[in-house]
Each structure stands twice: as structure tokens, then as C-alpha cells.
Image 1 (cartoon, helix red, strand yellow):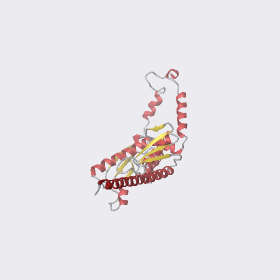
Image 2 (cartoon, helix red, strand yellow):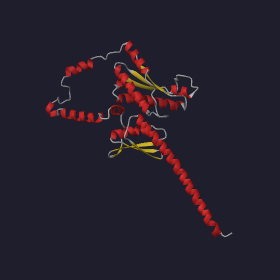
Image 3 (spheres, one colour):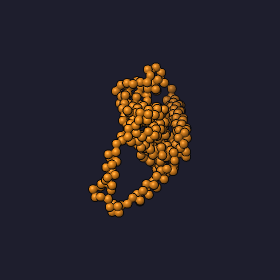
Image 4 (spheres, one colour):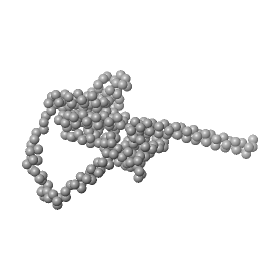
Length: 282
């Protein structure tokens, strides 16, 4: 058999198979990217974030918005979409780095103009603050009214009544379960919203002190679940403090899988045992 007559068809066949494989891989990847883009856009619409552009490459997303704040909020929402590996925020001047605290996130979600208003208010406050030369405060930094400060320090903190504790506990029990990203202490978008709700309840009952208890289900190791429950309880405490709750009113403790609500027989039972509880202290 003449090798020259056989070799060209073989080469053509190999090249054809390679091209076909490349087309299939490209189509599969484009399908994933289109699906992630659609779900990311749906999540942004549900979060009331409009005018945001999402570009997905593989499993990584670039999120572009008209302001830096909106870009960070949008990237936070997109990063919670299942299947998305990373979400990078882009504002009007390029990439935006940083992390929105929950208090700032809550403010901007409720009022898009709030950030600008707050900046203007802060600037006015700085201008209105008298300089040290103008106000001539005491050189040792003491208050201008030490008698008043001493009276405030000596004033005992009012203990809440039994009824106030019971009412606070009833309100806290009504709060939905706080959710986290699987196997981490990162709050989901819904989890962050529930923490804001908890902060509002605590502000309605300013005298009570609360222990934040973290619980996991029984999957995984006992040590890993214990550590995870502690990190989740600490994360909720930190978020509440960022939202303005007095840190002296809060303690956090993790119980791992040691105190389940129900004996787990179904996935629904496991979900019930994964929880954060607020316990009013006597």
C-alpha cells in the first residue's frame, strides 16, 4: 500500500475530530456561562439592583454598576449564586475593592441616595466642629463638664423587668432562621437580611442582654461542627455590632451538633438543627 495515498485522509480525519471536540467543549462552556448569567441577573433583580451588567467567563463573573457602592452590592449578590466561583466589582472608574459592612449595605439598599447624603452630612459636621484653638478645651483632654460626666458614670444601668425579658424573647423567637453558605460562616444574602431584622428587634428592647447560640447538624466531624458553630455565632455578633447594637449586651457561644432540635431522619430535620438562636439573659 502506498503510504502517500493513505496519510492525507488520516490527517484530515484527526483534524476533523479535534475540531469537533473543540466545538463541543465551546458549546458546553457557553451553555454554563449563559445559565450563570441568567441566574445572576435574576438574583440582582430580586435584590432590586437594576442597571447592572454581568459578564461571566467560565465560572467567574465581572459585575459593572454605575456607582462603586452598587458594584460592591451587586458583586456580593452574584457571589452567592450557586455555581459562581468569584465575582469582581467594577464601578465607573474601574475595579472596586473592599467589603461593605452590613450597616452600609442596609442603608444603600433602602435608599440609593443615602450614601451621598451621609457624605455631605459628614463634611458639614467636620466644618462645624470648632478647632482646638477656638474651643480651647482643657489641655489634659478632660470634659468641660466633669460633674455631669461623673454623674453619668455613677448612674446604674436599669435592669429589664421580667415582662420586658419575656417580650424580648418572644420577639426574637419569631425571627426566621439565619442561613450561611454551606460549610462556612459567610452569611447568605437572606441571612444578612435576617440579622438586620434581629438588630431592629434588639433596638426595640435596649435593656436586655442576649446570648447568640450557634448550632450545626450532625454531618461532618464533631470537632469541625463545634468550630463552625462558634464562628457562625461570632459572625452574627460582629454583624449586629456593625449595625449599632451595643457589644456589651451580646455574647456568643457555639454548641456544634450537641443540642439538636430534632432527631435527624430527613434532610428537613438536618436543616432544622442548623440554626442560630437568641437567648435573653436573666
